[in-house]
Length: 289
Image (cartoon, rainbow, N blue to C red; front, side, top):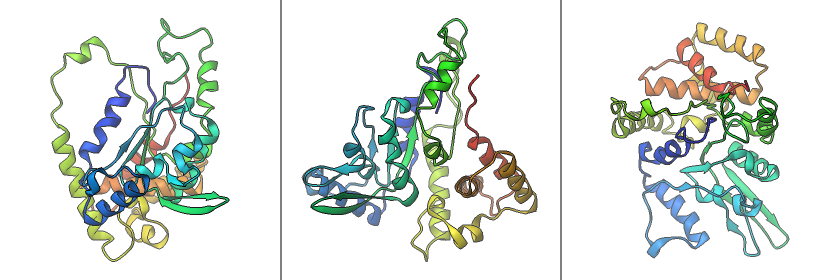
């Protein structure tokens, strides 16, 4: 999420665990095992709550991916099957952020030390938030600094392209005005959204019942081809967009996964042009203006 201060980025991220389904028995065991290794399991009891981890931007590579003299899981593993929220994304050290590239791709992190080589699970939903520039007011002529828009390009360049390529949804958020604060509550609350998410997860659980895959985010290869190949119109749009946007093979695959999930949320069996178009709209990085 890219937007000015006060736009609600952190609030939205903190609300995400509330719309996710609770951990099932197998997932609860995985999460509890990681917490046990880290020494944070409360009273020896298993948890059914999905993790939500928010490391500070001063966190070291060992804190984020794991390490230490006695190797322990880092934040990316502590957030396994939950949400890892990185606020003020460009303020993290670039090397620290790039250390997340392998876990985001494979769902696990390998920590190699002289006395140990340990692999921890790290299947997370990464949510990141950042201001469009250092001052945070790029789109407001009255508040933007004198270096705009060059400052925005320099600030956003702190996050590497390969890491951004692993983030499926890029959302540009607008500032919240005083008039927005007095609007009536939304027609759909968290409970209604959670019900739709739960229904979509049940569809995916049934779809991948006889495989090691749990969700669309983990589908790959023939499994993804079988369940996410769009119709002719969707395939033509995706091929055109891949060439126009110079999309990587990873980006192409991730668009298919997002489109499959959009179709599940809409209760649609076959991925079509509309779902591909929506997935592509999220794929575009918000432009610097």
